[in-house]
Image (cartoon, rainbow, N blue to C red; front, side, top):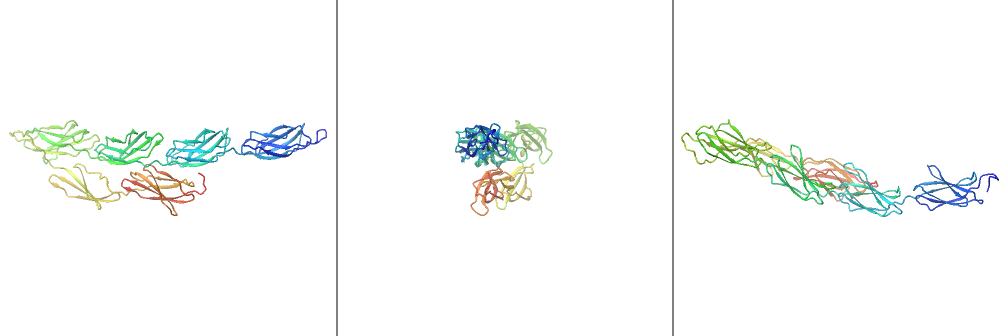
Length: 540
């Protein structure tokens, strides 16, 4: 070996061998020259990094290089060093191992808002980190993170969105370092089909809702009722209840109704219905008493307990110049004074309600006494009816009839058949008989269909389906899907307030025809179809 006294650089080591490779270290071993140097300089660096070095005594020919990065290629140079002279480098290359990662992960017990995840332990892992996020949520979501210790291999994900695909990435932690992730996909179940909402006990200002109890721990129910023209109102009842009386409604008005169960995780499937309030009832049993030559008393019974005011009018029989008096709702009798003797008078009593709607007129006729006549003990009420009668018929159904007060000129005809032409006849009823008929046709609208149907976000086994709502009071949507090339058709269903779903367990690399049908109380609406294709090898 050359020395500074003899001149020249020292001899270089030979035969560099690496061993004991881990994710953060490896051993470098070499053969020294015949004349051992004072020391060895071992230089190591990443391909694109700055060099690091350690010194080893000349009597040693091995060293463990530590604190390395996982799965990283390192260049190694070993130099003989004598005083200030160094040899040519002995060169080598080694790559650290990757951090041990999770190899298998199972997703199971997928429910509407939860799923469980378990995995096999990774060698040497100090803990695990699970990242999960929704793939096809209809609203923005934030990636969530769960960290557990190295002895935990199962967790439950909670407060998930129903009917939603989630991407899960599981990392094995080694101190502050994380392994490569293992990624899989899970899909929450759709909410169970909504129960049935029944409407009964109709009056002019109220109706009772009765619904099926929703499954699970319901915290409360949210009831929404909206008139055909007007703003929606809401109220909430305890989750143990399944009925509620809606009050202070507008008479002869159609209401769209919904009942939604509310859980700690959020709202459940909405139950839908509709109902029409009755016409306001008229006063009843008009009778007369205390008849004199210039006065008599009119008395009647309440038609309903929530009357706000009464209006009583009177005029000589056959004339139209009525005089009117407004009475409080607790006044159901009134003396008409200043009348002419021996003269018949027409009397009308009208109930006025808090929503300002007016009842049909309760009519009667009474005659004052002639001069010198004794008052009669009792007289029975009389007078002509003044109602309109409306007959409704189709070419396929029997006639139906409804009636309204003589001062009204409009009526809502409920519970008709969709997309059906009706013949309508209006007849005015007078004391002396019926007027000529007024006839005209009318046709109901057909049941609607969804709009802007889209099949998106394909994976190897799922497709996301979304649409815009169909017109009208949709109870639920049915989603049919079948391979376009042929096969067994399958169906999913969601509530009428849901406008998307995830079709899962599909065949990969397959074109599907997807059809969405709105379901109304009167039957199925129009069908709309769109194609979508699953991926062959796409990542979740």
